[in-house]
Image (cartoon, rainbow, N blue to C red; front, side, top):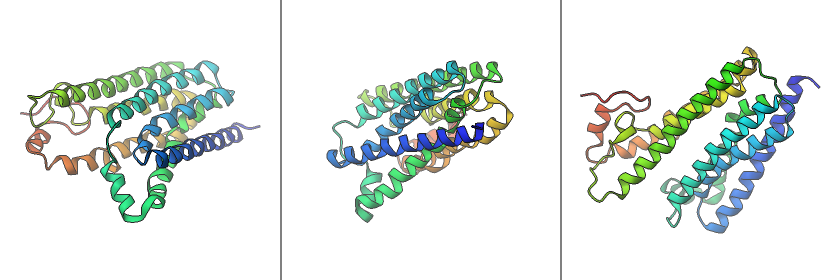
Length: 260
C-alpha cells in the first residue's frame, strides 16, 4: 500500500471517529436540552482523533504517541474548562438564535456538520504523522516548544480571565496580565498549539507532507481570528464601556506591548 493510500485510509478512519463523536454529542445535546455542549466536544473530538491515529498508524511510534499526548492535554484541558465554565448555565445565545430560526435541524447543519468537517480537516497533520516517518527531528521538538507556548497562553489567559470575573472591584474591561498584550490570548494560544502540531506532524515529515497539510493550521487560525473567534466576539465587546479604548491600545491577536 502506498503512503497516499495509507493516508487516505487513515483520513477515512478519522472521519468516522469525528462522525461518531458528533452523533454522541447530538444525543447528549438533546438529553441535556442545550446545544452548547458541542463546545465541550470540540476538544474531545481532537483527542479521539489523535488517539485513533496513534493506535492504527504505522508511522514513527514515538511521534504518534507524542502527538496523542500533546493533543490529549490540549483537548482535555479545553473541554474541562468549557464544561466547568458553562455548567449550570442556560443555552448559548448564538445557538438559541439558530434554534429560533429553524429548530434543531438547522443547528445540526450549521453547527454539528460544520464543526465536524473543521475538526477532521484541522487534524490532518496528525493523520499525516500516523503514516509517515520523521525526516527532521529538530522540527518535532520546535513544534513541541511552540505547542507549549500556546498552552501557556491558553491556560494562563483563561485563569486570569476567571480571576477577573471573580473580582468584585474589577474594572469594566479585563486588561491585566496577558490581556494587556493581546485582547485574545486564548485564541492566540490555540493558534500556536496547532501550528506546533503541524510542525510535528506535517513539516517534520518532509516538504511535500508539510505543504499538503499547511492548510490545516491556516484554517484553524482563520477560524480563530476572522470567522467564529475574535472578530465575531469583538462585535459584542465593542459595545461594552471602555472596550474601544482598550482595543485602541492593545493588539487584537499577536502579543505586543500596549500602545500609549
